[in-house]
Length: 234
Image (tube, rainbow, N blue to C red; front, side):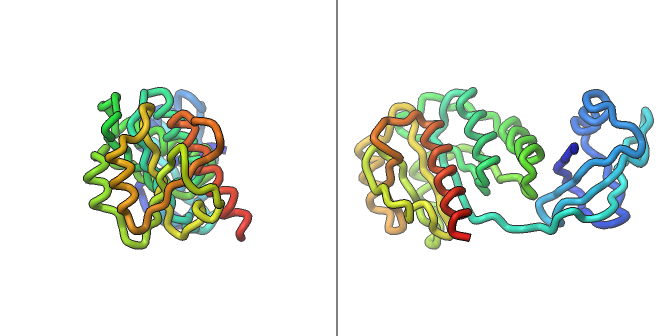
């Protein structure tokens, strides 16, 4: 069934007008007609069943009926990937959403080559991924910042997990209550960056095996490990 993320509050009897891109998708791609059912979520009120109640050249309206799932909170999982090329970065955004990440903070590191990042497009990618994978919320995506600025914003109750070629292999480092995975660029971390990371009190170095992983592989492997281990703990 079609799922859409909307900004409107959701409750029985609410009338929701989708945005222009969603209207185009519903009308011209999915060929929806009056009475067609869709699922709506907004990250606050759970998931709701709605039907197309009005459809003409000037107006497209969804009438909200009943709640299908209550809102639930995901474990706090932040992904901080160094900027990489467009296609692998798009993959990271999409798959990280599927794997339960709650926030994505792109980083500009010493060895970062790619400096451009289309924030609006990134937010669209994670929204569409959330719609497709049946999440009840859309991960937040922030504008890129430097590694130095990022380290100034780290919360004291957040465990920073720095992915390197060497480090711990104990699975417990993937399961803190609030985890923040820091992924390096294609050229790796500089000795100065490693030194700065080592000074972070709530930080830990971790590796994912004996082979050197590409940046996008490391990001998704780490998130997959956390998702599996957290599920196994329930």
